[in-house]
Image (cartoon, rainbow, N blue to C red):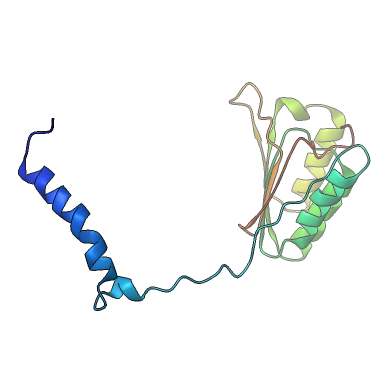
Length: 154
């Protein structure tokens, strides 16, 4: 059994009185109206190798108006590189982090060189055994994620 203490008594009184305060007609909390959300989230699904995963990635990049933050394991798909370059030309703030070990081969090196030549900041990460992320955050409100490697070798 709990020992009666001033703190416990205060908590009990607060817990019991709170509904009365909230519902009292003079309370500001009694007049709060709930408003329905103006937008509802949607979920889209894509698969590879038939191409719908690539389409979702490109739609996310092409739809960005302000910012793109990308984390990638493998990074070689020419269509993704082109879309990122076009986003940069539209004034979208694009920033990319890729796994170092997953991008040591020639195709990845060329893709990373192309991206940095466009003025897009790209950083490699090698502090983890593997950075196996595959995520794009667009305009701080759209997330594209899955198992697609942003690579033509999927």
